Length: 271
Image 1 (cartoon, one colour):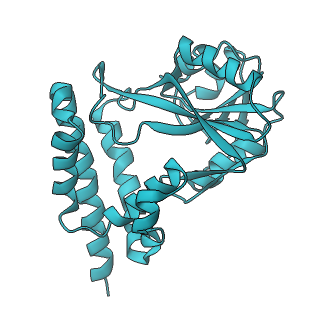
Image 2: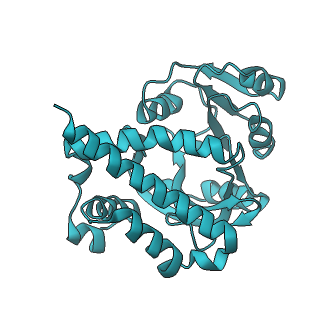
Image 3: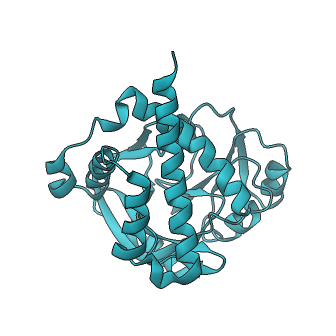
């Protein structure tokens, strides 16, 4: 009843775990950005259908992953290679799509991020992600930290989707977020990141994702953002309760924010 598409780029270490975690599906696709580490062959050996496309930007790649494969089922679960649906979530998703009203176009999943085996229960800022969508009724916008738009109602599920963003180590996380920060800085410098900065939407938006976009746009206007983010994560969200993993994650996220601001200023200083 549910097809799966897993987006990959040199995910040889994670792809087997991702495919094995969706054994409930009879239609698993791997949408690969021309990996060079054997990711595609591992996926084929495990029975997945592999598609290849040169990466251009995040939203375009995700949109292509929703339209290129010939999915067998009306519902598509969108995964990254470092994500694992729990058995409880698999059962909940299967029941949800079986009984979904016609006006429901997607389901929002609660993701649990892990660092060194510790669930970042308090440190994680955005736990909900729309990942189970009705075929043909979802699309992505925004080139970096892409946002999904859905034609219809979104319902939240409760069982967790486990996420291991540090499965390749701290160095890989830093390298990836160095790239992300450059793209975020370019959006800030162009003014595009502020387009949704409505206080009314941030507080009263009809949808969780809509409110989140407006809150982020307002956040970009704050002075001393890296320090504010660290304080918010540690003492408002309660990351301190997650122990050393929470402290580490909060510091890394604040460093990421600092890189964005440094690069934005660098862009404005250029002749």
